[in-house]
Image (tube, rainbow, N blue to C red; front, side):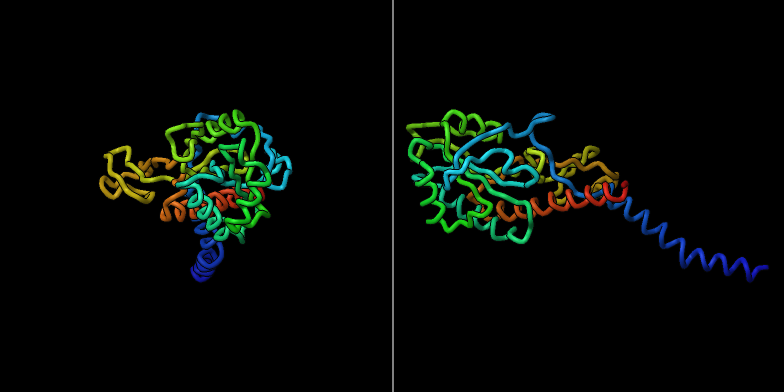
Length: 252
């Protein structure tokens, strides 16, 4: 009798226990899976738009549906930050080239000068792969208006270099048109301890699930270390969609 019980216990240990352990770990991994912050008021998304790109094609939201994309605002005669921003966009494009459904969008803030022909010359000069990268122009007021929806600024300014004021930031937009970002640091709600990386337990007060992140919001397109952070965050967002897809598949 004891021998038979021992056999069942051994069978449980060898077959059932690993399944329970794996399920528990998977559940914990899902609960603790890193996700990016959603930026802006609840329900905020990039509104519908229609602009003309460097190939004289009309570019709308539909061209970006189902894609993660990175957007910014430049102008081709910019004497300061725009070339650096575009070079960094090119670098991001190259680093993420093996991943599908990632696109890029640069709006000119000087549409009176930056015609499709000028934008085409600029894209060629900057050695951009245009397969998933649009440089767009259009109505000035519409461009400045949509800049605000990206939580950026764009305007004419006689005192600014080149006569235009625009953000040096790059914006990460998810497949639903929401602005997303990683975190600059995490703060414990219980004791106020700050850390650069998210942790399950506070290393100061040992309480669990107390760290809350401070969202970056957008990414400085002129700083190399920020560009690397953006690339990492795009991969986190890709993993987030992969995780959601797996969860949906398991439910179905």
